[in-house]
Length: 268
Image (cartoon, rainbow, N blue to C red; front, side):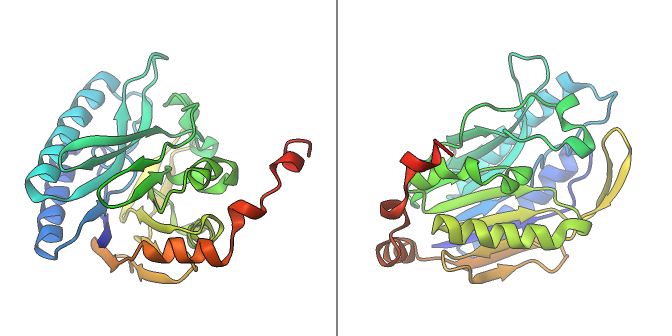
């Protein structure tokens, strides 16, 4: 199958403009025969300011997600990304979503909130590991941005035999080398393909009003750690062909699951 990251400049509170960019990108993906597209983290709205109207942002995110669900159905493309989602805790969730032919088939709430920009003051953290879902394309799971730094999170998809991991992100230039190393490491350590979408542009985030530049260095990586496609800073699709048979073959050759020793890990 053919997969892609659709990297774009996620403009804060510019839902109509962001949705227009996503719509154009998904239509282009359809013309290119792509099967799955991953969008950046918080793609409809970006991150909120301290005085943001969260109720409005939640409503606008829901409308944008409904529009993308319909595009997924009409174009026949699976689409993933993250956006605001309601919670019972007052503050919203940062939720990964995956639509397949218009149906919502995967949801996961970001567990690890980035403290340097005070995400914990804006969001409620998730408490459950990423689920793995069987889709027409294969067994798919994923996480969100900062989750990349926490290998414990990814053991659940590995044990559930995920073949493809999706990672929407807003990961800035100063740590671009970390992003690349972590995405490649995620593919190798979990013996699966990874599609990781990082945004372009710049924004001011967090309680310290950090001005961040984003490199647009999205990645498609195979289970052996080979980078199949990589963004170079410009908005647009970063695409590659993937063959999930490689996952099964590599897991047969190097049987990580068989050689794990969980009886020791828990005592450590």
